Image (cartoon, rainbow, N blue to C red; front, top):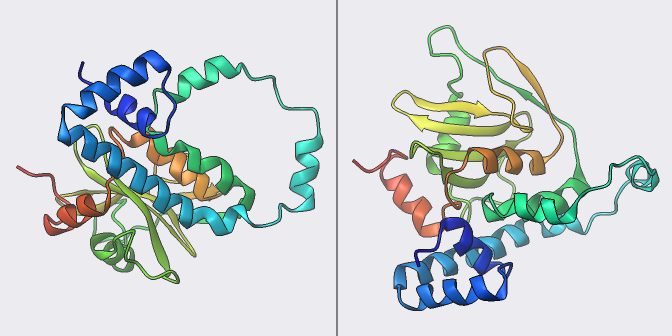
Length: 230
């Protein structure tokens, strides 16, 4: 049996059924590379959990608590929801706690006349080029939330700042805005309303083709200039 990336992530999170868990466990025991993937996933989960811990400790505002008390939400089929979640990268669990701090961010996609629409400015490009999630200052004006690769193998990074937040991917021209919080496609001169970092994580989840990069993966990608290996 060759476990899929989703099965590896689900195994690391303890979400597989007994039979499937035993099959994946056997495959991991026979393949050191799979064992390293499990360890990397668990390390990333721990790091992101620590990152959002201050948010989860905040008191939920009264107006949000009142909304939760209103019986207006549709009934959710939990079985179907679990099946849907199993098909997605396993860091979606971050989104729920982060919604407790749903601060409004206005995302402004800016362009310059002498560059291709969608390319980020120098400050953001510098942060995306150089900052690693595990090493960036806690008070950095632009924080990189995570790094991943899309279906084409392009490196992408989710970020949050004081005036703009979203996802940018690296191509030959530079870092291009790919999506804003909530998954909206970026375009020149367009404004997007971002609910929280949780929505950025959801957009990253939709774009990612594999689990997020760990510390070593980010360092390797930075050494390559965030360009795929040829």
